[in-house]
Image (tube, rainbow, N blue to C red; front, top):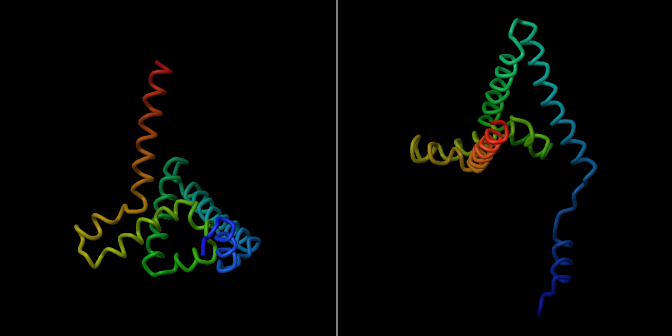
Length: 146
């Protein structure tokens, strides 16, 4: 039996699970928005207690990353991500979850050869290309504004 692209497409359409896009998009929007609202509330609270805007932003990021790592460790973040999908991936908490989950999976291999080598499995490309792009943009900016 020769499988044509049309036949393959029909076969995958029949075996693929149906997705309720309206529910998925709504859940991602609400959960991602809730994470951002929590971050904004933290920012306002820290500013209210005397931190300047930059310090409050730094501490808000640190708190969100820390709470996300703890939630990942207890398995709560994965349950939330299963419900909300991309709503949990886009904020900074998704980045923390990506790093933490790799570290947690590799802990049985030891702190150096396990956690130390696998912690950036998912986040490594983001860091690599982010740092590379920042360097290139910085060099371009330097020559343009010289």
